[in-house]
Image 1 (cartoon, helix red, strand yellow):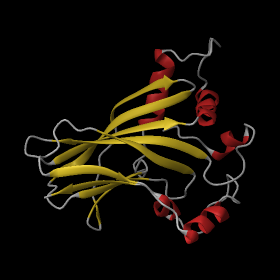
Image 2 (tube, one colour):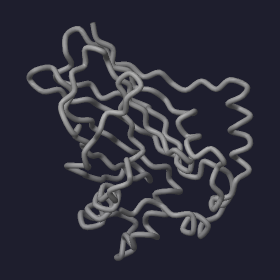
Image 3 (cartoon, one colour):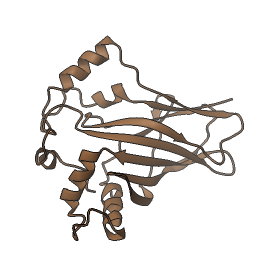
Image 4 (cartoon, one colour):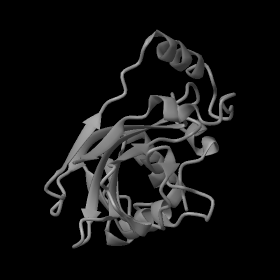
Length: 211
């Protein structure tokens, strides 16, 4: 796995200060089996331009110097972003009630360029298909808030159960949230917030409601 490291961020200007340091426009989708159970997630990460430039540096991309990524470059990006160590949860958390739903490892990873930004897409199967009578909530966040995810789009599922609805509930900060973000902005890339789960506080939610 080759997610961006603090040292690499410091190699480029204007990236050494403030949490978060990496900004991701995310999209999320759900896949259901023939019985209407949730069986997999589809996750899309669209990185900001500065982070994309950092990927060029870290992965040694664009060796011919033409400014474009070829198929080999994109395959390296996709592999680096989806080859996760066992303890890494992919900043992807599916909840039903207060219980975390176990997820598997990424599949079908691809990467492409959109303008000057790199986009990574992959499927994330559930460990077991999930009955969704009670709905579910999907959150994309980095617990330490080094990465900031904004859920821009819910991908339209082809097999959403007839009695279910899918929506995005954006994070809306109150005064306390704004103050917490102000304090986090003072942290350098090497510093870790006192609250190791602070990122969840600022997470958008993808809500599946059924019934």
